[in-house]
Image (cartoon, rainbow, N blue to C red):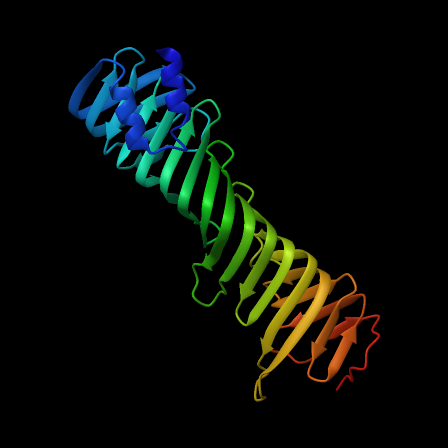
Amino acid sequence: MTSTLIGLFSRYEDEDLEQSMTDLLNQDIYSYFKNVKYFKKTDKDARYHLEAAEVSQNLTTDVLILTEPNGVLINDHQAEPMYYDAYTGVLNAKEKYLSLRGKVVLRNRNMSIKSESMNYSDNSQVVNFRGKTESISKDFDSAYEVAVNADELSYNLVTEVGTYDGNVEGRVQRVRAYEDSVKFFADSIIVDKSNRNANMSGNVKFQKSQLLASARNGEIYLDNYNKKLKYYALYDDVVIEETVSPKGQVPFKRKAFSERLEGYMAEDKIVLLGLPRVYQKKDVLKGNTIVLRRDIETIEVDDANTNFKIR
């Protein structure tokens, strides 16, 4: 009986949860409760606190099947408690495992994650989400908000590192209205809340104002917005397309290629490195380092090999 139960439990991620519940209910003896408040404290590593409209308890394995669960995940290692709610769930307190399905929400005062399914293990301190996952996190000290959508998310409650995979798209929204927000797209992105940075990989795109840049890999340094340090960087096969709108002149398109791009928000400039070249109107610029500034036609070129005429 035990091996059968373990087999069913291991398939929660891949099979319909409702069918798995039915299979379990048909095999063992259960107790049934309504309007339940459940508390369990095992040791310093794990504590459960949940409420549910209905609970079916397997008297053999002590596995709980939950309807409309909501509660809190808390232990001595994570930064702060995370609160959750969903349509249905399964709690295996012995194995320290919680599985939730249907309109899942996990949140604290700085972060909210929504998805169709969630699996959490106390042993690993990792929460896994699958199915149209949306997250929003705020940093009040640096005055920004990061929103990311993806097919999957793995979030470590202790290190506060989230790994997003599949059709990733997001934005960094500044609190102050006059500060630029940025959008990004990638196959995968790792966001480290503690160190305030994000690493992107695979079909990376970065959009800011009238600039669209693409590359294979990239980074965002979330704490550097108002510092004279690079705020974002793109690597490998960088392509830039930008609409330049000089004051009192007709807007025009500018295109550039390089192996590396560094963006400085405080100075509103872009530095191109690694055999960069820029196409602007009828001019072609090449050099070791090229500096572009938003809505300014003049371009700074180091060691130029170009037909561009300085005015």
